[in-house]
Amino acid sequence: LLRGDEGDRWQGMCEAVIDLGGKVVQCSIDHDAGAQLDGLGGAIALTRYRID
Image 1 (cartoon, rainbow, N blue to C red):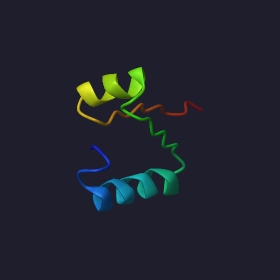
Image 2: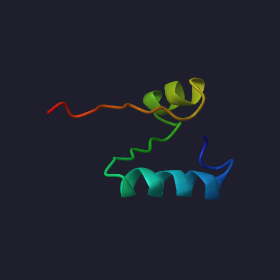
Image 3: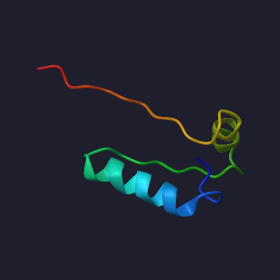
Image 4: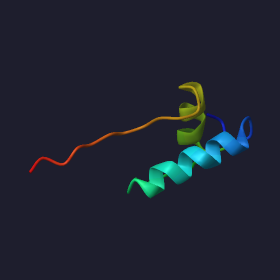
């Protein structure tokens, strides 16, 4: 999601990630990495699972 398009939905998603112990990183589309992310659709998730 691009933050400007659906602000409430983005905020809710970020809060859910943080509540579950995740980390949210935002980057500007004025930066190369942000422009690449925008080209991928505006959001990306890296998931990792702890192995005990």
